[in-house]
Image (cartoon, rainbow, N blue to C red):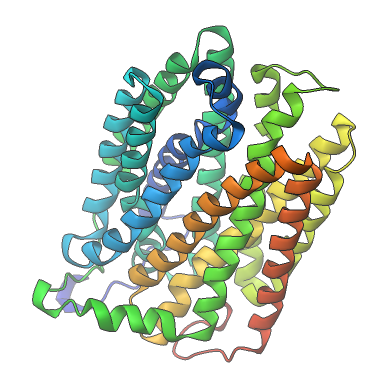
Length: 412
């Protein structure tokens, strides 16, 4: 609250507090995605070292995202009592601690247990990030800030894969995961130092939390339900392609090593840029207009990966990554704004969105690996295209959902 009991209207873009918030959120987003996806480039190594199938190797990711989905259902309501900043800082430190233990896993099953726990403790950040931004930033800066935060997650996803794969190829997967843990430790320190305390957060007494009422409100709005579907299917398409990619490129006719394959993740800065630019674009023309464009770019990207040529595959990954982060950046920020306008808890709605998002990552990611084993690249490509068609249909249908008041029209 501002002095005199007035509600603080939020930090403006360009202010010192805004810069601190964005630096902290980018760092926190990096921790989340470094640790969430640091095993994706290592799936062929797990296949060789542990003798597991491609679908079983994918469990090192699917169980982490499943744990995150479960944790989100608790973290969102918990933040209404504990506070946003406390949960964000606690999540990055707990996740870093588990990451430091992963290289010492004594068996495949022990590694899977640690990866599941890592997903659970990571939930504190994504559950409240967009709610924190909505509460602490001025309305004119919220869509852009959500895009910057999603861009930070893209940077983390790229960095984790670029780091772990070459280290694994030179040494082994334990050193690769250890390198990711050390990187996350540095990010956790930066988040702790930079993140300002909440000014507009109002804690709820436990007896007044009314979890059931908040959940019903977050599920009742038709726009929010469509956004949950968009989150699940869009990330499902991305993970399907990238999970199967390593197995495709280590085989004929490419025969690439893990270090070379990891260079393909250099397309991820395009996601950072596209999420940030699309957020600024949405502030001007509205989220309803921008989201379908991102979906169309992603569909074109999957289609480009079908030929065997490496240039076409790289171009397809670039388009898929660009389009996906447009969709996810717009949808994730939209959830918090729409929930506020609909009278639902922003953190609870964000938790439902991200729960759907990570369930989609777990389920469709595993299906994609099975599709690769059964049908080659045609299987993952068809599955990803089908998911993106669903995203496009849901995005276009949002044009017919009434805008709610009071809120900025472009945020609804």
